[in-house]
Amino acid sequence: MRFDFHVALEEFIHNQARPVDKFGHQPRLYALTQTIGEGLQYDNDVVFAAAWLHDLGVFIGHRPEEPAELARWDHVRYACERAPEILEEAQFPAEKIPAVLAAIREHQPHDEPSSIEATILRDADILEQLGAIGILRTVCKVGRDTRFATFTEAVKTLSRTLDTLPGKIHLESTKRLAEPKIATLRNFLNAVESESADALY
Picture (cartoon, rainbow, N blue to C red):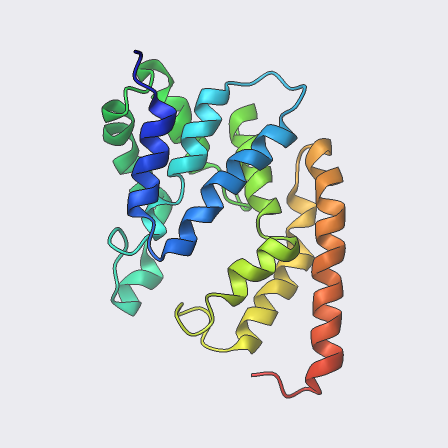
């Protein structure tokens, strides 16, 4: 039976993802790439591998714990340094590894993707920051992430997300998927404003 790199990568991330809720991002992200990429010509192997490995550097045990060092931490660089060995052990096609690394390097909203695979991954990652999932991913970090000591900081981050990320989406298919997520996030922020009486903390 042929070794399946899909299973190997999923199992690797499942074992490494800490806190455990970090694991949910990868399967959701890959599912979004499938929807976004429907009808497009791209290498699904590259997108799969990049989706599963792109955030390796944010897991406890892979990132520094000291706050000052963590603030300077480049999780993307770390993922790109570790990915080749992980992919080789998973028997991922060697000739596709450079494309995986490129997609990982270009997956953040401030990046300009240079391939369709990186574009799909980047758009999907933006969608993960919008809507109900985006709210959950941000609010669950309050008190355990140095960026979110209070709910006020989480709400400010969500407000910036609403103001900036929708305009960074590249693909029309992603823009359509984003519409209900944008509405959900906007409604949430409006509700927070109306219910908090300027006393959110």
